[in-house]
Image 1 (cartoon, chains in turn brown, purple):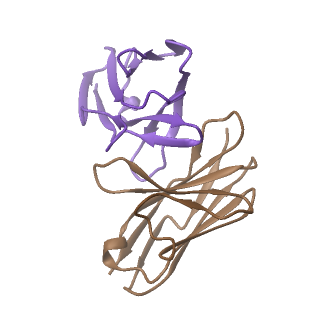
Image 2: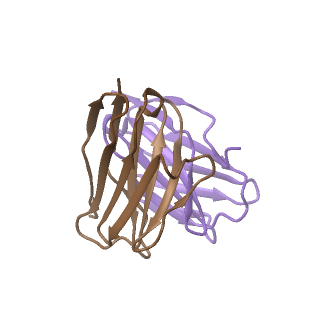
Length: 114
Length: 110
């Protein structure tokens, strides 16, 4: 089946560091990729939607300058958390969507900011 | 305001019995509904889906029921197996955007 690879799976870094998370669709071309954030015992909260070659669409309340999204190709999207602080610690999950298919998720990235 | 709600955070079922997971939604524009299964430290895995023009979809042990008038979705697993123990998320699509419930943790006891 369709596979989405997300890397890294776990990051621990100091406050003020910028962290890049990659999301790749391995065996299909993703017309759209989504970035979610999940807090403990809560739902997946959509942060942004990105289409290849165009600017990402951010959900209300998500800072564009804080969470930079680049969707350079039909198989790769990146999320960069800039100048991360402890409140940015969370579980980030990407998903990829191609036509007529349900979206497929990566395994997520646990980000811990000290 | 959450448009997709799973009001039961957890469910415990005996092996071999039926598991019924429920989901309610508020947006009548949702046209496609999905269930995902999630194990710890992994991303959600697609399980089964249903279009808004149908009221039932079956795939092996998994059946999804849709009651549009009640804006209610349910997933039936029968017979339940210990390997089904996981967190189950329902999701709904409005155009190209997906909304998720908060998940129900299913525990199937041997």
